[in-house]
Image 1 (cartoon, rainbow, N blue to C red):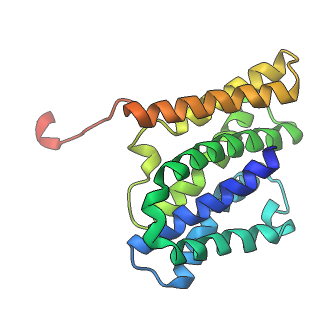
Image 2: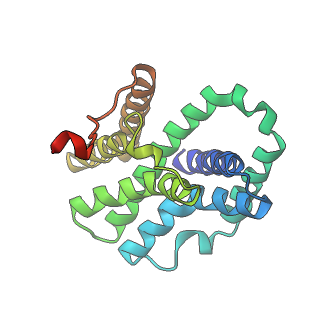
Length: 205
């Protein structure tokens, strides 16, 4: 199940990256690059930080084909994409959970301690979107909108907590997905976010 959701998620993330590139009037090469980075950037950064070589996608070329194709598909369907917004929000939430759990599993297999496992999960979940926004010259959405990184943190903690108490992997996976999806959808529905820090030099003089 996790693998299937992962493949769907990286395709959806690639399409969202392509749309972000389109808002910046990039050519098709730029679209392909942003689509690829959005979908696979988090896992790539995770592997580099953990010393997990070779980087995952280099051993699975079909990920490249899938993400680039997803980006180009978004270009072809751009005029209809606004109608699929709700679907993409759900797919993005599922992708966040899947990426987080996969990131945790990678770090656990490498024998890292719990804090690093959690950071690995969060990195996998959110860094692709951060790279997308940086390359598109805008403040990353994860830092200024509804709860996103916090959802990834909750998922990682829930998953590790359940595994630590000998809950079956399938049950831990289902519980983490339920928590992550409910949390992310609730954040979108009610605009839940962390407190914002607004700094104006004049206010502090």
